[in-house]
Length: 209
Image 1 (cartoon, rainbow, N blue to C red):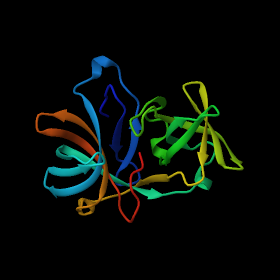
Image 2: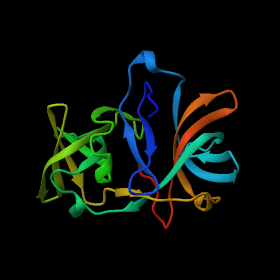
Image 3: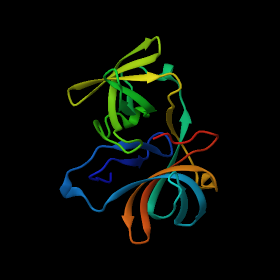
Image 4: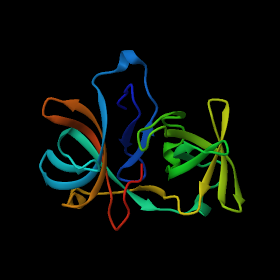
């Protein structure tokens, strides 16, 4: 597990060939390098090098570290979220109070408890990421509201209809084709970015985090 001062995506082996989760921030003394999240589409991939056109429009060179891990995401549904599930939810504060989800990642059972907590996230300004266990899931008029628990705390998050809900799926290097959408937690390096993990979209599903 790579500990960082900022949230990161960590990939590990479970019953799937690969699995991923947003990890909690570590203490400052564990910081090894400035962290960046690369979101965009693959321009080229060769060996240990990825070139990505980011959502901001710039082209970034990503060096893949030795032993780097790869996974993808698969579509899930609101009805798949059950009490006891471990989830990662990116959210924004709502005007009426509480938080509204931007996306939901349902972790495989073997990943339950990893990266538990709630912390700042850079999907959108003022967004946060909460990795927590679902205490209850209540269907409402405008979607579903879940109560999640972490470290003895509880948080209610509304999940509006249309919110992307995904889970982890296997991937191979053959999925790293031009145009494929990726989410890459990386370290800033002189050559651009150094990555230990890559989450790639395939079959029309893209990493929403």
